[in-house]
Image (cartoon, rainbow, N blue to C red):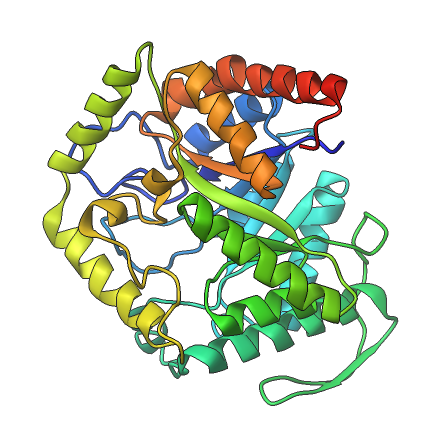
Length: 362
């Protein structure tokens, strides 16, 4: 039996993990993120996901660049794997391959990457970059990953694609961990799923219902089997753990009631255009409500809200659906990141061991 992995959103943009006017005890600078990363690896988190953002959106007025911060955190941590998110189109894959292999060597094999095909048109056009149509963005991301993997594993890379042209390019040093750096990606559309099946190691899902989660997992698995590959699955979830279920529900209602309406609506306009622009109209956020988008990756939908026992039970339920990693976010990182590691993760491990003893697949 494999054990579920835990990750947390690195708050490397200001404004916290919810688009709400409610005060959040969450820092965004290096000093705060150094403290969070060191706490997280001590209390059982295996991964940290650094967000990619260059222009303010959903209230994120300040943004630390993901790979730069990842490199800094690599030098002050010992165990946690650091996932740097990026947008193809704003980076060249040969340059980013070098950046990631550098982080991997600094960290002793703890680098990973999340390739985000993009939803924020203004972020591209402001920098003079062409905004591609939905499926074309995923096609570019697929080429981007192919170039990364080739540069990490081959002495020299020659690549002829529609978006990238590489000629006899070397890249050294290679990654520290057997020339391999895990590749994550998100998405919900058919284009995203096909891309995951072909080139990605992990498929990130926004918060969703059980049926929505299961449908994505089953579909991507079938597509990956055709490619003779395996893909693992990660799920976003916003965590509210309180002493009683009612306290947790009250906290959720307070977050939503204090939502920054202008910021949420602006975010909704941007992401739902991106989601609905897929050929089948079923991309990420295509059916998200206003309340869902107060946590900008539909984290409330996942249902990690209640007592520590209730949240641990829900996580086991998600694992039995086929989820391999839970990506967490919190209202107050100063307190709740450590509390989750000390209260919830041990309960999940106990429940996994209990299922193992009973011979139940989990």
